[in-house]
Length: 167
View (cartoon, rainbow, N blue to C red):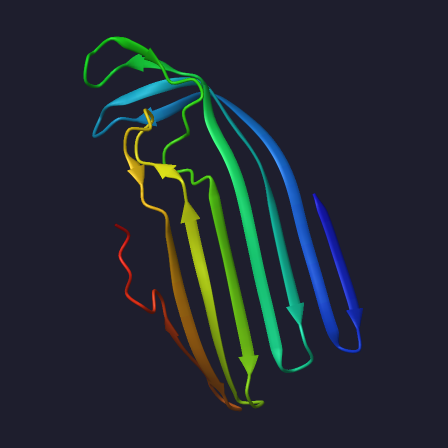
């Protein structure tokens, strides 16, 4: 991993980065209610990068991206359709998105009032170990407004602002 921070005149820029390589053995895989398989080995390797910038009392910006290559290295199980043994070596691990990202922009309008807008995205993931069911890529927009006084801090947040459904 790597971390950096630069400050000058009230401005602050931060950066975090990491590269990873993980390997797990004898992983239990759920195949439904009371039905489990055991994968011999899976590997997850990738990189993550995030930035944040803060201007004095006005603006904050945060963004991040992650690339995750999570695949089975050793996993033989019966094919759910034919019943014959099949190797899932190289298949992407289910519910492990290849790409994820987020960004958030916050603006302080006055000392007591502020607003923010951001986005989240996920891309390339599967719902099954055989990678037959590809889940849709999606991006969602979120927003918030906040008010604070001497006794209270009120935040109104709206997630999925445009009411988008993954299709």
